[in-house]
View 1 (tube, rainbow, N blue to C red):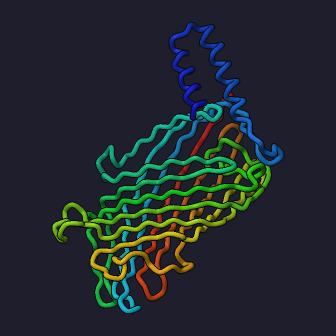
View 2 (tube, rainbow, N blue to C red):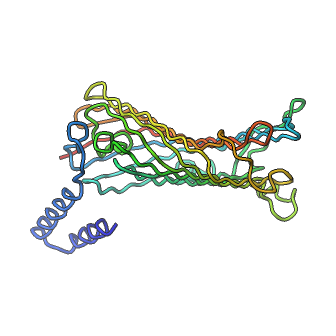
View 3 (cartoon, helix red, strand yellow):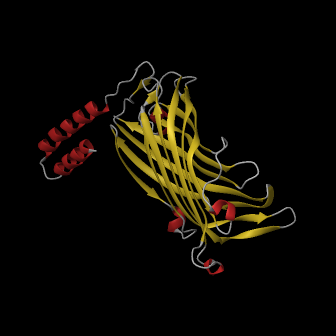
Length: 332
């Protein structure tokens, strides 16, 4: 962090210096970035791109899906199938030797299609990395009912706030690269895989929408869950030829701490569900990248899935997904 702040201050000084001083300072910044980019990797498998400057255009699509099953005396009494609106954002990013700046535009907000909010923080490194996703969905709709009757849930009846976070550590980080698949700051030359360990956290708060909060007295929380899991997974980068990269990885984590409360439900209001192995948090990733001279394009996907509950008790399944289409050009 201190290094990046120092580089930013140097770039600001460029605007106050004359042409020769600017060039000299720019060379020093470039040399510093070269040293900062050096990594302890096996260059037979992973290398840095030749181009110093990379420009990417990204189109992001994301959404969420929740399934709820309510059981009484071990038998299913009701279920609900909920989903949020799909979000679409356009992003452009500029990366110079690992130092990047990005700008995102949400057409849905610009044209007033919806008012949901979501932001992602992704830090992909060869050795370790993390994701942080926050979503506030005001328009959550779907269906609910039992074996005899199914009712439609208006899109403005329920609002949902979720936080998904996960951390990973790669053992074979000298030969296997997450950044090659998701940020294109490295290039995977040969196929390689690695065992991955990590931790996942999810928090979900579901409330009545502002137009329906008169239906309850006081607290309008319909559901409030916290899940924390740790686990072991595996990732693999497939390089069939120099023009293609296919990435597949999965990190299942067993829930070691959980808490769940539901409105007017005596069983869950007392605290946590009984522990069972199906209580899981799973992070799955996919990436397909095609290279052509100094250009590349592809698709990436990240899926976060949580399962809480056991046979004979209430169950909750939450699926959060994001798909990204990308196009990039390298210069110099």
